Every structure is written in structure tokens, then in C-alpha cells.
Image (cartoon, rainbow, N blue to C red; front, side, top):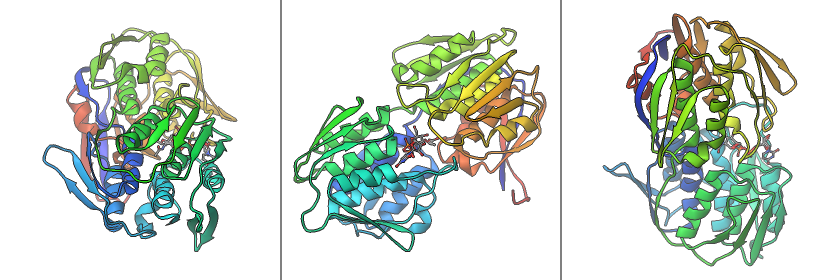
Length: 426
Ligand code: EPZ
């Protein structure tokens, strides 16, 4: 099995270029099912969730061409409804977007149960509520989720989301794009990737207004056409390297970012006493190794609140900040599994309800650890960069789901990090 090995203590200096946003790329890939034409998508990140999503489309009959310039053309003129391979679908949460896409194109959908990081229950009741409001019936068949818009087809309607769910907002947008009449999504999620999916669909001829606000209006259209579209930079990848630079000390330029998307991360790091300089499409994070950081409290919320996908990374750096910090998880039922791995390294973390109470220690120490999920693995990498001694990180396939060349990017700025092949099966 592959493992990441990090010898901690080296400051980071240099620059890291950020790739396309995983959580924008995945819904755009599945949204291409609505188009029945060829789309060219640029700046797709080279991560396994993207690879798997393209494999699902190919298995359904789409023609996918990976081009020399890194762009990918996806021709969905031919797609066989209900034919997504359950064994791949079950490996990623983004498979849920097949529901809205198939329903919009065919008037029905049949998709196996999706996968994704284990944060406790990950229901799809808000997705199903949206589909029902548009006139579809929801049923199960041998564990698969089935939707049917019947002879009447989908009709626009008002949809109120009980939680500003990213997935449900995107799925209702997909289903409504070709529904008859107007749909209004109230309490919609406002993340940048919602805006990205809406702008992709509008580039294909859809009529979606208000994405990025909590009220999205969609006027259904008869058909969509192909387009060329570039994926926005990944704000979570960028935030991860910003925190890594702060934890290790040094000065790192993070290139190809949209600073506005990083506002909460930037302000928290500044609150901790870390220097963050913003430029048009980059930020520079600097901390002299001897500069002490201040404890802070964090509460994750839907955008524009503090992003839940940056919670584990901040918890990692706060384990070595003198004083008591608190991280309250406001989005997921249980996103604290990674804390066991930080405790193995000497972190002092206790969990009270949905809050991690972190009492900073002088130093963490390297040991054997595992990446329990995508951002939990990133947290262990950050902790290991600042720890004394060697840390081995197993199950790194979870990291490859969302980080393109993490080891190469960190090695290029001075981290003592490599991937080794071991014969143990962990
Ligand atoms: C997306 O998941 C992201 N994944 C997650 O990122 C991210 O943590 C999350 O949005 C929140 O920002 C992808 O985009 C592939 P939600 P999603 O629907 O859409 C509850 C990463 O690290 N809920 O906004 O599944 C749900 O249980 C991953 O890149 C319902 O109750 O998130 C959760 O408590 C991890 N019913 C909350 O809403 C529903 O029908 C947020 O879920 C749907 C969601």
C-alpha cells in the first residue's frame, strides 16, 4: 500500500499553484448530461473523484476525450438512462447529481446509493423534496433511488430548502433547468461552486438567475447546447496550503486563487497572528517560526460562513497554539473522526457535543497515522509538517480524492515529504 511519510520541522518557502475546484468540477461533469452535445471543460483537477465521475459518464455512453492541454471534452449526445455503474457511484457523494441530471434529460432517473466521506448520516431528503415539488415521484428499487416525472414531465415550482444544502441546491437547479415554467429555490446554498454550476448551465443556454444568493430563479428551457467552460480555483485546496504554511512557518505564495473566496480563512489566520497578504489572484502566507500564534474560536456555517471543509485543517494547527481554542461544527453531524489521529500525535483535544476543545501543546510528535477522510487526512499532513520526528500516513487514497499532487506541491516548497510503498495492507 502507498503511505505518505513526513519528517516534520522544515519551514515552507516558495509558491504553490492551485488547481480547479473539485466541488465545482463534479457537478459540472454530471450537468453535461443535460446538454446532449459536446462540452469542453478546462482546469479540471486531476483527482480521483473527477476520474471516477468521468468513468461513470463513459460507462453510460458518453464520449470523453482527455486532451493534451489538460482540458476534457465530454459528448453526451448518447447517454443510456439508469445505466450508471453502482460500484463507482457508491464511491462518491457527487453521484447524487446523476439524479437531477437524468431526471431533467429523461423525465426519470435510477441511481445507486452515493458514497462520500463518512460524517454520520448523509440524507438526501432535501434533494427528494425538491424533485417532488417539481412533479417527480420518488421510490426505491433494490437500494437504488428512482425518480419519475410521469407523462406530465417536470413543472417549475417553489422549493424551500430546510437547510442551505449544497447538493440539494445544485440538484434542484439541474432538474429545473429544463422543467416547464419557473422554479424558485428559497434558502439556497450560496457557495462559489453553486455559482459555477449555474454559470456553466447558462453558458449552455439555461436561464438561471440569483445563484450565489439564497433565492435562485430558474426559467426552464426546451434544450441546451454545448459550451466551453473553465472550472474556478479550489478555495479549499488553497486554504489547506495556507494553513500548512502557517503551521510549518516560512513564507508561501499561493497562486491562482480568488481571494474573496478565502476571506474567512484569511481573517482567521490574521486573528491568529499570521501574516496574509492578498493580491489579484494570489495570497502570501508568512509566519516566522518563532512567532507565537494566538488561540481562536471557529464555528462552521454554510457560505459565506466559515467553510466546514476547512475545519479539520484549522483544528490541526490549533493543537500547537498556546491556549484553548474551540472548533464548532455547524454543518455535519459528526466530522470529528480525524481527531483520534491528532491525539496519537500528542494533541490535547476533547469533544463536547459538536465542539472540539483544543488545548495547545508545545509540540506534536510523529507517529503512524491514517487519513480517515479527505480533509481529516489534510489535517494530519498539516500536523505532521509541524511535528517533531517522522509521521507515516496510511489510507492516502482518501487524500487523492480531492488533492492533486499534494506531495509534489509540498515538496516543492521545502517539506520533507514522500510517498512510500509498503507491504502492509493498511
Ligand atoms: C458538499 O457536500 C461537499 N461535497 C462537501 O465537501 C461539503 O462539506 C458540503 O457540501 C458542505 O459545504 C461535494 O460537493 C461533493 P450538503 P453535500 O448537502 O452537498 C444535511 C469535501 O471535503 N443535508 O450541503 O453532501 C447534511 O446531512 C466534501 O470536499 C440533509 O439533511 O453537503 C449536512 O448536515 C466533504 N438533507 C448538511 O445538510 C439533504 O438532503 C450539509 O449537506 C442534504 C443535506
